[in-house]
Amino acid sequence: MSKLVLGTVQFGLQYGVNSAGRPSEDVVRSILAEASKGGITTLDTSSAYGNSEEILGKCSTPEEGFKIVSKYPKGKTPVGEMFNGSLNRLKVKNLYGYLLHHFEVYKNNPKVWDEFHALKEAGKVQKIGFSLYTPEELQFILDNKSPFDLIQVPFNIFDKKFLPLMMEVHKKGVEVHVRSTFLQGLFFKDRNALPERLLPMKKYLLQLDEFSKKTGLSISEIALNYNLQNPYIDGVLIGVDNVVQLKSNLASVKNVPIDIEIEVKEQELLNPVNWN
Image (cartoon, rainbow, N blue to C red; front, side, top):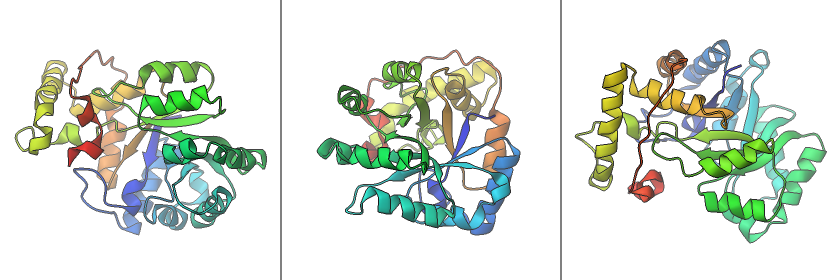
């Protein structure tokens, strides 16, 4: 079974610095068929990803048998109502995972977590958890002793700030999924065409290029396998716009040690929110 998880934000929204645009429904069907054929068993979505859930409901087939992780965004809709809306849009009876998409919802009202537990106890979802952006958020949840089964956090060659806590929760049986494996496409950006705000990242990208040259591995192979080979990571999200990209990602999976360490000093630039 592949550690790869197919992220589907692109199916409902324009996303990432290199995105070619939202794929058509026919392309989505082809992507899902190829993902299933390639051993990918899990899809990641959210009711905050435009109409991604609806597209998946239209385009996926029962034969593909994907496990689906969706998310509850901030808003006034109660958790149970939003969850049932996700089931309806996805055309499924239950979910593999349901994450709280925005940490501030929990921070402002930790009691919201009782509603997630109710869904799990009712057998509507197998695993509940959080989508997070900073280790401080995860530490807050751990300090509050709110039990959870699944987290999704950013992690890549440049951004390893979650590693100590990932190790801690993984040892306790929590399933760890990571996103931003390619730092939202930054790893593939033309080194000489970076926007001014991202110019400090050029020296690190050149280090990545040097490692690529030395090993003969592509940037995609380096970044993807760096995450796949981490023993504390159970799922590595990838997002694609077409079947060619997906096949390229599947072909990039190699059993080759990725012995590279790059320390980024400008930590604020590891969060795409700060790129504008």
